[in-house]
Structure formats: structure tokens, C-alpha cells
Image (tube, rainbow, N blue to C red):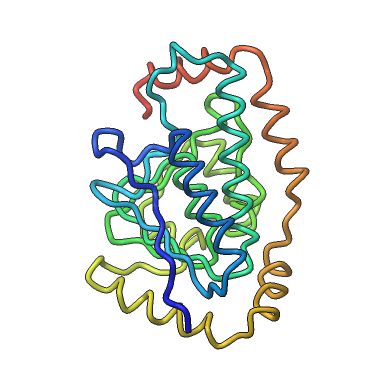
Length: 234
């Protein structure tokens, strides 16, 4: 059985593993490359203080609405690649998991969080519809509406209760979690697993991308994000 591939949103700690352009490109390259290999499992784990605080908000003043739209499109491409991957994907989350970081966890087939982990999906606060279908697929439409429209922060217990994550496990237990998921994934032939994951994903990538672009392309994206950040909600 091939060893599980380990990738993750690792960037300088002062950026809390924020998803910048380089990191998104690297993750997408890793996920795409794994699709052409005999991969049973890809593990996503962030180092440092938290899994990922989401979209990198650094240097907003130097970016146009078009620059930001392109970055969101690339993030959606990454999320779709993870969500529809022909192999198992395991997110091991801790700390603050916000925005696109929470969407990355949500896109994985197996989603484990340490006690004390917090999740938030704030995109609607600055007019972005990102990952709504995937979230609704995990927690149901009504709960997804309450989480996204209400700007709620979920602790690990509520995230497990709603189905956003599949289990809570402290970090010393994560090696056993990886072994369990790896054994499960390796017990299915690659062809059957690919079809199985495709059926479970019920993906509509073009529609999801259209929802994102339609909202992100509205003029004033940078200003909306700046207002959100200025409100102290990050």
C-alpha cells in the first residue's frame, strides 16, 4: 500500500497559515499530481497555531478587484480538486480554521479536529458565495444557511454534531487516525474508489464556480473585504 501523501497549508506563523497565491498553487499542484499516482490517501495538516485562517488578507491595498477575483477562482479550483479527488482526503485541523481554510476542511472526505478548534465561514460578510453547496452537503441546507448567513463560529463539538467534521481527536491520536483512514482507503480498488468518491461528491463544479464568480465580480470587492477586516471580525 502506498504511504499517505502529506500536504498542508504551511506558511509563516504570523500569517496563521493564510492561503496566499503561492500556497494555493502548491497545494493544487500536489493534489493534481496525486491523481496520477497510486494514491490511497492525502493528509492535509497545518503546522503552528492553527490549520488555516483562510484567505491571505495581506497587501490588500496593492491588489485590484480583478486580482482578488483571480485568487478566489484559484481557491475554488483547489477546493473542487480536493472534493472530487479519486482518493481519500483527510483534514487534521486545530486552532482557528476560518474562511477558505474551513472550506478546505469541508472539502475533504474525512475531517478530524482537535478539541478547541474553531470554524467560521465569513464569505457572505463581504459578498462572496464560496463552498456553499459543499457545506450544505455536510451539514444540510438549513444549518449551512445559519452558519454562513449568521457568521457563526462553531467549536469542535458543534462542528461534529452538525457533520462539518467527522470526529474529534487530540493531536497525539492523529497518527492512529491516519492509519485507520489509510487502511479503509487501501481496502478498495483504485477504480472502485474513484467512482465511489465521485458518486458521493455529487459535484457541480461549473455551477459552484459560477456562483463564486457572479458574486466576487461585483465591483468593490477589495473595499468590501477591507471593511470586513476593519470591523475586527478576522
